[in-house]
Image (tube, rainbow, N blue to C red; front, side):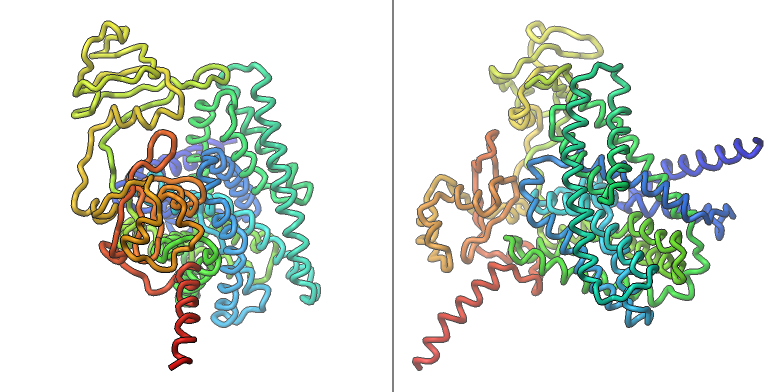
Length: 603
């Protein structure tokens, strides 16, 4: 009984230390995972002396935490982002993980001399990127990159863990069973179809069931998020018992619930945000305590070698092959390959061989740990400089805008939005609010008043209004301070401006562009770009058209391209990676070779 209080003291103290030291991550741009792992390592056996070596309980804690993180990842993934990035992201999350695992397995085979299955097991363990680290760097870290690149990375990192889990569990089962490897690929294919198929199907069914139940029962407000999360964890356990991928099921269920009109949506989002931080800290501290850094010394050099091969060869090659069919430019593919941070999921998967009693389980766990640390140290601190060097950071078009959405009861088509009036904003300069906006309240100097009696808006006023979600973008501009394009911004968005309504044929004729498909010539510039971008466009998106780049400068409230920039010199203002040739560039080169061949033969 007396042990309870020291355990609570130590556990809560470690969580508090992780929370307080997270300020270092925000200040120096380090991934939070590295901070949390560092706290666990310092408190562990080789640090403050806390001994923790129960691999089974660590895997249990990590699995529960990962299920919560994946449900939250799906819940926060917008359907628009999924539509825009579904094909390339899912390709990366499945085929990309498998290719990366296979290539790392080859490296591990020759560096450590392990049997093929155990070498491939190392590849499977570190095959997926870490959703927590990627989401933190892209969402919390303040990096604003091109929307379709951001969407691809977020969807990939949120959905590739089930594939890595499947490969790890299946390969470990094959090793422990001692069966012949003759049916390896058949076993993998059968297991893949069963686990992923059940995961997707049950995730869709479970997601809609969660939404239906939440919308039909009446509970005290604080109980809605608890009930929804409990249902998601039940789904995770049920699908796992059925032989499917519980991790994929909770991600898909979160995706369905997050894009549906579910009661308590705002409260659930806030609850999940806090609980996800708790899950991340718990998982990172657990795997930090489980490690024994003194055991890393003997394998440090070969393990770092595998990490470097993974970073500079395996993932870039897998990314390039997977993105060939899609319209990604070289620099975009290079950035996606660089944002391949390994994290707590890889360490969690490294626990599986350890808990399963594999002879080399401790070796695999230590190798995975060193690879994760190397990835975070090498890539975690260089995401922003890499994005800037590759010319992918989108310059801000408007200044500060502060708004908070409040939830309305039921399933209303309007939202209650709160804006803070900032300096030099259009509304502060006298711009009238449109008729469809319904301002109801103004809070000034701590006093509330009806909008009709507030008079001219003043700086720091809080304006409460009801508005349809599709018009929020326009209101953001009215309540934001404008930003002028600098020289760097002009380089990014192109030094020339085009009317998106003009026919593409006029642009082709004016600049004598080659290798533009004839069936696009009758389309407008906007239609051509929308088609090439997969149906949606965001500010900063680029489309290559012959020898020039077309850049989306502005998008109206209906999602239509309102202004297009033209960059005549594609290499201007950004680095050009000689590798990562896109499928379009390879096809253009082949057509040039084919056309050149007859002329050379004629001579």
